[in-house]
Amino acid sequence: QVQLVESGGGLVQAGGSLRLSCAFSGSGFNSYVINWYRQAPGKQRELVATITSGGSTRYSDSVKGRFTISRTYTKNTVSLQMNSLKPADTAVYLCNAADYSGRSYWGQGTQVTVSS
Image 1 (cartoon, rainbow, N blue to C red):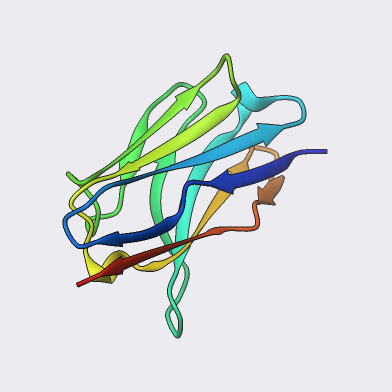
Image 2: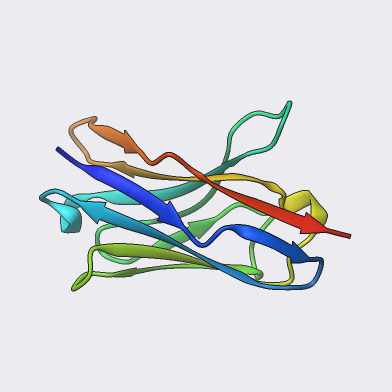
């Protein structure tokens, strides 16, 4: 059974930085695509960043150039480095692991609040 635990959220001023981590436990880390989503109150869940099993990355237009996703295979972790944060980045950030057979797992989320 795969479990995901996010950490690193908090309160930061606009222009600041945070680094989120997603710890993956279970087998098969190398075979999963890892996604970071975010959900703000009253808004739809938004896919923010993706990293494939091979390390290819994709970003939403809203975070491109400011966020960087990376994975550490030796530690089964995925990080999301967030720079130049804006109040619009305020949301609960959720880690998702998905494989090509359709299995999908979610973490519990970590709150990011950016003050103006």
